[in-house]
Each structure stands twice: as structure tokens, then as C-alpha cells.
Image (cartoon, rainbow, N blue to C red; front, side, top):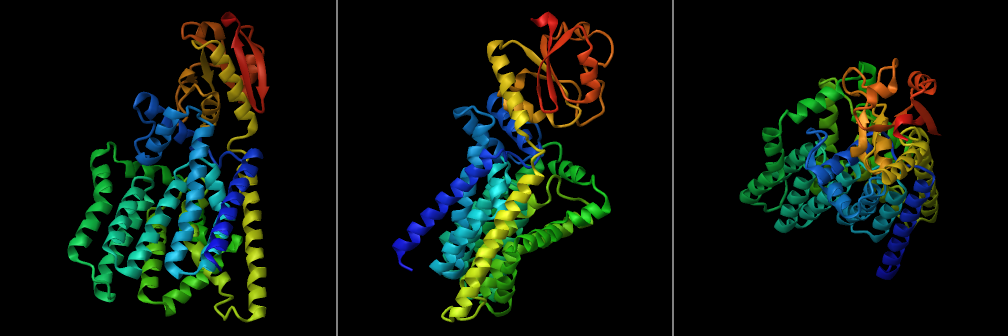
Length: 478
């Protein structure tokens, strides 16, 4: 394959990936949970007021999205553009890792193609979370690690440390990756022919663990305790089913990405030391994270496949290598080439099918009706900037409405979704008397009990319905 064919093909794959993102976005695939809106509002609070909604969230997403919102203040579109760009970057990073591992244009191009259509990557490129940022940074980290293991370059090792350190500011799994990288580098001093100096290993350790140490020591309350407390809400069967190792096997068997595991095992058995090192640094953290969650009887909140997306993408170059080399048999054999091509098409088909499955399972997270409700409220707030909106907040479904409205500061929560609290608006008595001194002009509710109460109240009248949400206006506010 010539360089020209390779680069033209790579550009075509990226164009297809962009079109694929746009296709699912146009179908209303906006989110996979309520965390996306919470993260967006956290970034908005930091950018607008210098505050944080949760001290347990690591700062990278908050800062990245917050700076973007200062420039392009659209709470719905801007975060999705950001994760879309990181999603494209993760395709290129996976291809670079493949190149450093196998030095084969055929395998690298196939990695680009598979990554472009991989279901978990596509979903996380549409949902504005920190996951796709973490995936792209870890892929770059491991590409530099692979280059160091191949060349012994001190420059590559320290750059690997810098990107690994960046990953520790995005997700807590990055802390486990940092430990795995450092331990593998230390092991190389004895088991590999690389001439890595102890000074460089010490510097690498300082780079990798500077942020985790500072963050754990200076951020009150202890953020790790908060994360563990949230993760201990599941029964034992749920903990087992949502465990990262179980989810990794299940998801990748379903999408056929599991065939990359054959190439990983082949590398561990027969490959050079550097392949063993890369496999250990890449997939060792999966085992460690799984054991930690199992022993603490904890589980990933939200869709459990979110957490294992990074390891699924790290598996992608090995899947591409397996397919590109025709079952580890000579690619000169015509029947093997045909079989490998058919299997590649089958894998791509499984990726596409799995993307539609994830989309179907996620339609509840941010339905089009909630975006429309937010846009309607945006128009009302623009017409009357002083108005306040009382919103039902017994659960976190209200976050989407705030994001869609573009004016989250204009909302007053009726109750606290995290704790049992007395609601501002009781379901009895005069609505006007309760709210008249609080500057509230609009009410947004979705539960049947509240809507039945408001529908018969003489103090309000209904303006519009958007799916389960109904918007009311105080008659005194007209």
C-alpha cells in the first residue's frame, strides 16, 4: 500500500466517521444518561461563577468545557461538539497506537476503519461526558509507551508520562493506569534490554502521581469516599453483572471486538517483551479496577459499558491485526484473505448493530421533547429576563430542561433530588400565596400528582405540554 493510498483512505474514513456522528445526532441521540447534563451545568457554573456542583468530579472536563462555553455559550451544542472532536481524535490515536505496535499500514488503516464505526466510541462521542476525552488521552499515552518500548527513547517515555498525568485529571481510572505504566517501566529495567535510567523512572513517577497526591490531599471532602459511597447502591447480583471485567467480556463478545483478545493472547505467548509490557500496562488496570470494585462491593453508576470503553478501544489495534493478517496465517493465501475480508464486514456490521442498540437503550436519557421544552423556556426567559422558573426536581430529570433552556440560573428547584426535603410548592392551598414573594412566574412539572393539582388551580394556567412535562404560568405573572 502506497503512502498516497493510505492517507487518502484515512481521510475518507474520518469523513465517514463525521457523517456517522451527524447521522445519529440528527436522529436525536443526545445522551446515555443524566450525567451529561450534570457535567455541562458543572462546567457552566465554573465558567460563569467560579463554583463547582460536585467536588468529586475531576477537573479536566469542567475546565475544557467551561472554557469552550465562555467562547461559544450554547449549553446543548458546545459540549457535544467538544466530545465529537475528541471522538475523532480517539480514532487517530488508536491508529497511531496500531502503527507503533505493528508498523503495518494495512493494520493501521483497518484500525482507523474499525474505530470509526465502533459502537462504544460513537456513543461516547455523542454524549458529553469525560469518557471519550479519557479514551483519546489514554490511547495517546499507550502509543507513546509503545514507541518507548520499541526504541527506548527517553523523550517518548517522558511524553508518555505527561499524557498519563493528563489522564489522571480526567477519570479516576487514570490513577490505575499511571500505576500500571510506572510498574511496567520499573520491570523493564530487569527484564528488557532498554537502557532506562533510574533518574528517568523517578521523574516519570513524579509526573504521573503529582496530581493524584495533591488532589486526594487537598480537596475536601475526600472525593474518593464520595465516589465509593455513590457506587455502593447496588445489590450483589448487580455488582457482579456491572463489574468492569464482566462487562468488558460481555460487550466485546456482543460486538465481536473480542477477537482482538486472540491477538493479545498470541502476543503474550509468543511476542517480544515489549508486547507483553504493552498488554500488561493496557489491560492490567482492567483487572485491578474490577477487583477493587468487587472487594468494595461497588459498581459503575450509569451504563456499565461506559467505564470499559477505554479497554475496548485499546483492544481495537489487536482486532485489526487479527483481521488484517488473515487468522495469523499467510495473507498470500487467497482463501484466507477472502475469509478475513468477510469477517471484517461481519465485525463492522456488529459494530453498527450495537450502535443502534445503544441508541435504542438511551432514548430515555434526553428525549427530543425535553430539548423542545428547554427551547420554549429559552424564548420565555429571553422575553422576560427577570422571570424565575420553579421546576420539579425530585429526580435528576430536571437537568436536561435546564441545559435546553440555556439559562440554568433562572431555575428554582422544588426539592433536593439527593435528599428528602420539604418541597417549595405543596400540593394543597394557594399556589399564588406560596410563590408570590419569590419572583417565580413559570412552573415546570411532570409528575401526575403535581399536574393534577396545577390543572385545577385557579392561580395558574397551562401554556404547553412537551412529552411528560407541562409548563404553567402564574396568572398573577401575566
